[in-house]
Amino acid sequence: MKVVLFCGGRGTRIREYSEAIPKPMIPVGHQPVLWHIMQYYCYFGHRDFILCLGYKANVVKEFFLNYRPQVFADCVLSGASVELLRKPEEEDWRVSLIDTGMWRNIGERLWAVRDYVRDEEIFLANYSDGLSDVDLNDMLDRFKKSGKLACFLATRPPLTYHIVDMDSEGGVRGMRAWERADVWINSGFFLLRPKIFEFMQEGEELVVEPFERLAKANALIAYRHEGFYRSMDTLKDRQVLEDMAEEGKMPWRLGNTGLTRKKR
Image (tube, rainbow, N blue to C red; front, side):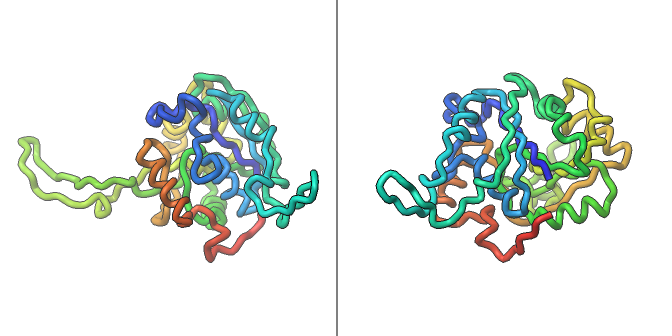
């Protein structure tokens, strides 16, 4: 299945990094978070990527045009030749680099590449700023059985606050940790059918007007995931992911888990 990755945002909440590079290019360990996301999809057999570029598109293009897997893989150097000891997954990637404009929102970027996915039964999409260990095959199975037009990953918000239950006068009836509240967020992993474009209009944000129309038409479903998910919205989020990478604890690298790899 084709995978649409939104790579054109400015990442204003993590400005210290995104002033120089696009948010998806911020490194986690030795590689950009975008690379980790692409490896995630590659694990499930999806290697045809459509990158919606915008802010500092040249940085993303230069990364792929100058990509050298031997820098990160085990290899043997003999004179001027380099032999990779294991064929990298990236060699099988097909990456379309599409400039979708500087100031467009997610919905506009998806609309801009609609002709690339019109003939697909289902295509995948991702905000390109979050990592998860969700079983994509199970998510796809449930989506197919539902007959809906769109599905998104719903996870618990990574909060440390307590929720206050109070009346209009400020009287507190109780407090509870957020984990005990039925609160879920859109985590930016999408499964979509091309018919979704019939619910979209140019200029609209994907999860606002189009998703409202889909919900009213009973054509939208959420996949609840209690496992790992972390977005890179702030410097704190980035540091959490970086610390995990340094410690070798990367649950989003599914090749190191018990999940069985399936190609669809």
